Image 1: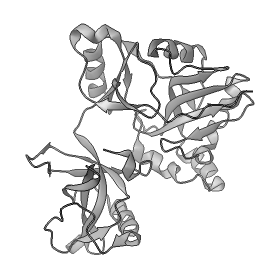
Image 2 (image 1 turned 180 degrees about the vertical axis):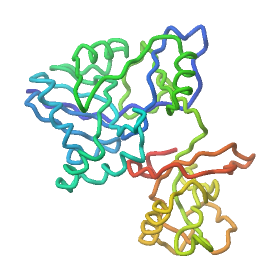
Image 3 (image 1 turned 90 degrees about the vertical axis):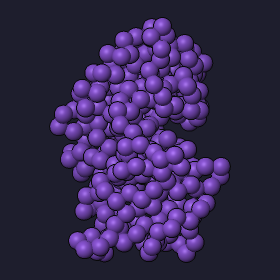
Image 4 (image 1 turned 90 degrees about the horizontal axis):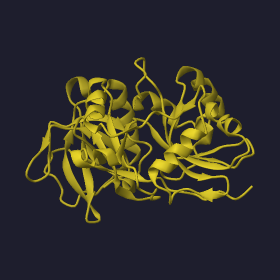
Length: 319
């Protein structure tokens, strides 16, 4: 069997639907809310799963080990997203988080397999047999992936439609899904690049941010963070974009408090220190996703609310 090449996943660029005259040149896939995964199948019945950062996450998802046997003796590298489905059949990142930290805890991963089963949604083919496919156009890679007929209890290849982008976007909005990913039919796969050949559209304003500090809660929230001070990378520094004090469950506030206490530092990590009383600073390594209404002229978030912690991302992964 050939040694399989290692690929960093291709990334989508935030944007809007292609113009109507270009619609037939694009495919549309439902945007998933999970953990990006590249699956390496050498053709001997085994599988290695790597996250967006390249970390080996195979141990966290024992139910996906049988994918190697399902494919058989054909070596392949597949791109996809690991998800945990809610009662509506929608991918739910909050549910998946209970599985993501179990890479080195096989007994716990086996137990959680029954409580929160994971599913690998496949959407691209990077290598097959003895040949890399990344240089082929998306339409050919997609046809080859669908030809593998990989359907099982814990993996599948969700549908992609060609054209009809407005209808696809409206349908995902009506179904309460996260959004849409638009992929140019003639585009190659560009490992590790954020390309305009793939466009992601979310149905809410969201932003990946880095936590640089926090302020203590008061009253009912005494003893836990009342708000997180967050920023985004800009010009090699961390730019402050606002304080996020809503959207947390009590459990999330307690968990964040534990994480922030061990990350405490004395100096402000933001390029310009915000004038906030009683601020506590932390190493800028925790990444989260926030929802917000708009941004001010100077870039601050209006009405931000916490959406989720992103343990699958590091500060270098956003921007």
